[in-house]
Length: 271
Image (cartoon, rainbow, N blue to C red; front, side, top):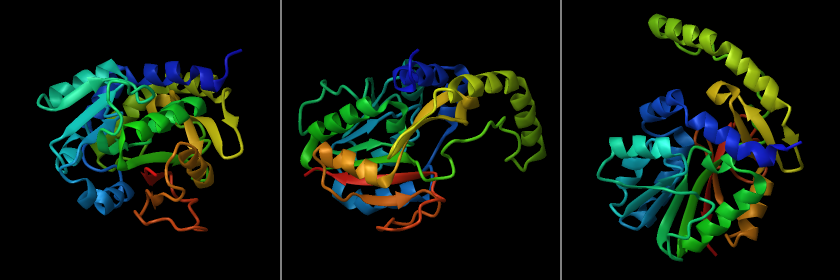
């Protein structure tokens, strides 16, 4: 029987390749949360007009944000459908089809800033996560910065129960449309939950769990701060990254309670 780590790629790619997923990503604009905004603002002066690599660009949410810092901008994504959507939206941007685990198309020490936003690094298994970190370290300049977000193993999203996506919208017409869509998708949502939650793995420092997004169609990596810091150090980054939580955008200090944070933003520096 195949385990979650083996199946993550196939399951997650299939969820993101659907027409509904591509359209939903294409509608996204601006920052995901105040933590992302605050974290990027804290390093903006260091990376302005410097080469930037945007990993997992999706349909282009981060393109205008990062191009406001530098015109020397390159983005990649491993889902062809999302690459095409991003190119249609930003035809003058350099958008490539590629994989964060294998960045051989870029020479060493090319980019001052590498970004992997919206928890994109959590789509791959633990072994491949280490490959991403090592490749990012290689392509960063000697004083380069890796800015990424990751799902919080101690947060409220860890081990989400079955959810059909009802509610959450105040506009009556939008609520009706959302409810009808959720009813239509309910059999698939329940089927995905039953199938993929059986693959859940909970380990010391990290886990792989079925997430409610995309009709429970994802397997996502969750990590503790301590485990993530160890991974960064083992990949050649400085020991203590700057960390911001996603709810209020506050910096996280040692010993802070992060149980309300769904994910965390890390600013890691190459040593």
